[in-house]
Image (cartoon, rainbow, N blue to C red; front, top):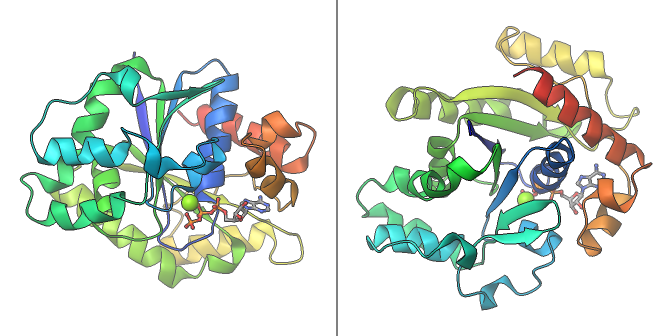
Length: 261
Ligand SMILES: Nc1ncnc2c1ncn2[C@@H]1O[C@H](COP(=O)(O)OP(=O)(O)OP(=O)(O)O)[C@@H](O)[C@H]1O
Ligand SMILES: [Mg+2]
């Protein structure tokens, strides 16, 4: 199986990374793709959205796997750490992952730790989507090294060239030094309201800053309170309220995403 690893990243908090991980994952799974989500944020928002209320009580999370690699132990069998939630498989995270950042500093091949975990499971999936934390520290670097492509989510308010510039610089650094094949899928605008800023203006803003090098997806994700409700019910918005405009937007985005491949 030729699988693709996507890192959903932006060091800015609250721009729809976790929501997009879950809903793009669901949209792709609905198209018959085999999808694994990886919660790679110590806040464990994805684990909670997927119905794990107390991730710190789990025996095996991405934290344990990362520590296992650092300590050069053999990884447990997949059934011990991959959780299935209907259409989607996922690996949860717990707050302890924040401690790994310190351990990584002295680890050999520290940037490659997550990649070696993904290597073990890659063959079984069409898509592996990593939900990154809102920072550009060593954990996010691990995700950028492990991925084939980066999907950037941004709200219209946080499209400021400054914020994106830092992220793009980091991606370029990773590309030069350690993951030459990394590519940027593009920018997905989330929590879009017509009042804030128009699509055309967003594209113009980004084209002006980056000279048309970066795709802005046609699909834009509108804002809706139903997203919070679906999270509380541990469901993707597509499963929870299929007719909702956000659900439809993520279904469209899934199709658009695949069409560029
Ligand atoms: N389309 C949307 N409409 C309304 N609310 C949304 C939408 N997308 C996400 N939200 C809400 O906005 C908040 C932030 O979204 P999300 O957790 O996906 O962002 P994030 O980038 O993963 O945040 P963090 O950086 O903290 O991990 C959440 O409460 C989420 O439920
Ligand atoms: Mg998140």
